[in-house]
Length: 467
Image 1: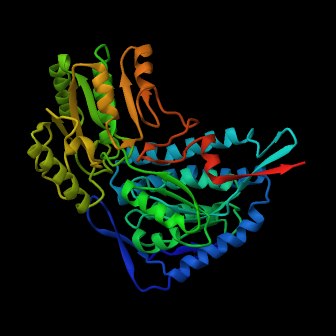
Image 2 (image 1 turned 60 degrees about the vertical axis):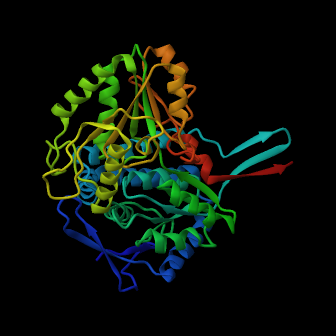
Image 3 (image 1 turned 180 degrees about the vertical axis):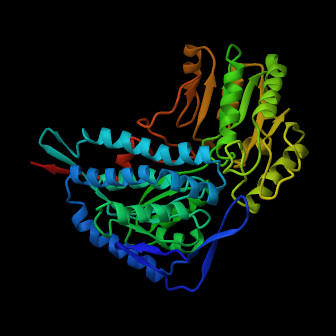
């Protein structure tokens, strides 16, 4: 059984309850973790508070040195980490390595580089404005990106002088445990700065979020749970950083590259089996070219979708995280058919052991359907036709969410459309997200920014000193 990591030591756990961790593909138990007790969470928070007193006074250069050590440790262990993620999550090895582990190193490199020129002080007339860390950050992270979602919180929190208690999902905790091992064995990070607590989110996670001696809640997950974090924060007026759900859209303009729009959208759905908050799960297309688009989707499906063992290099679509997620996605597919949508591609039954759902594309979808409005978190796409561009823009924005989006078309026209979309990030044509630009949601998709220099601000509070 694995253990908590508190104040620089591995703690086996007092509670007798053990939580099974499964291989998403085989269904076999691959590890067990302890359910943290309230006392163990208290120990972790106490250790983080004690470490903060010294850590907050270290120089920015020293803090950057320790973060660079963590980054280099991740790089040295990238193959091991990718294998762990493939086992516990079910993502293909390609996705685990490039989209999870190597992406973590890339984002850390960009922030460390930008941090060199970052100033914690500025003078405004006779005032010295100082940016200071909050204290202890409760980091509650999701199962779908078990390493990089920790990294996206850990890097800015440590660089700004905060200390942390990390609580990963009990479904995919093994990458977090390996990260703790790297920090323990391969870095000189002072004890208590990083702490790891294991257990269920609804038990030890809630207790950590509500803890009176933490000052920040940094959470990634569903909007439903994110709204619960408001309740956790209100009594002590904690700083909140929330990265929540999405129902993002690709908008293909009439003059746009059909191949690019289709491939970009469907490759995102394959990448993490659709279990990504920024995935493009709606595709808006001109009615005049719908048959062309439908054929391109069918061709892509026939030539690119290979279900199977995520460790096999030939596999492009692995299993969902577990049977519960499979049932959730299958229920949405049934709802879509009942609402009148037509399944263009996708098998109703996958002849494979494990929580598999085939890539499923619906056409004849209207934007008010449940499958077009709610986050499914699986490999399901809704294709919606339009005759008038402004109507299409309005329908893209007719969503509770505002996390991601994309526009394909003539560059200047596409940029003009992108400016009208109510979402935190938009890709235009081949525009690739870079690790220096911020990522954050509008509307019900969250609060604050992750990635790059903007992410530092969520972990700092200001003080004005008048001279």
